Image 1 (cartoon, rainbow, N blue to C red):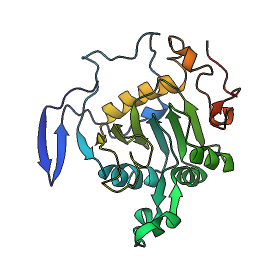
Image 2 (spheres, rainbow, N blue to C red; image 1 turned 90 degrees about the vertical axis):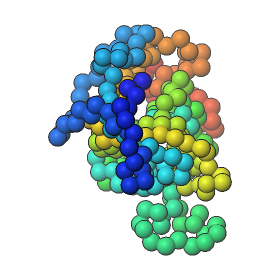
Image 3 (cartoon, helix red, strand yellow; image 1 turned 45 degrees about the horizontal axis):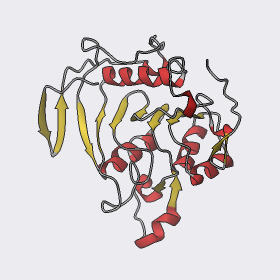
Image 4 (cartoon, helix red, strand yellow; image 1 turned 180 degrees about the vertical axis):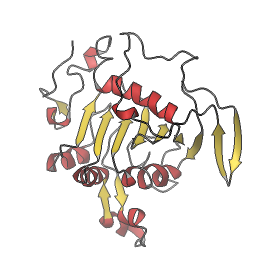
Length: 254
């Protein structure tokens, strides 16, 4: 767990948490060697827990900050951990800044998040998406259209953490899933109540990436005691059909 912040200040209407930020001019966090975790480990002791400055993100601000200013603006990489994965819609006007029609017309002018991923991947952005549940039917349909080489999706049924890391330089960590009611553009009366933080703290980002990479590469599979709900560790979309798991092209880890 990240250290509790030392103080809270108001920065122009935005709550800012101030901690012991250890900033670096440059960081290769995403490409650094994975930390070595013992089979039952994953927890950090208090002395090594990363800390830093973070801004509070609440409810509808998730869409603007994480999706529009974060995911859609990525240049190098996007790393996402989410429990639920749905083909949430991203209104084009919110990305381009142009006006949008009233009522339901925005739906005809929106792309699914999978289509957004596809466009980013075509530009060379490397995308890793790790989720827990079977993707929604709409998401699976979109994935079947095309799965670019730069877009890799894996599933871990035990995953409950939610994070979005952009270019290994900015990160969201909070409650929101990759769904319309979580990170999406749903109206206030229809979306979830979500809380999280946004940070560019190198130490915090590196710490979360270490945990993400350990799951992504299967380091935590060896000691997992939930294999009855995970017959094929880290299965990828090619192993799913009609919402049910089929034989995976990912080698099972013992």
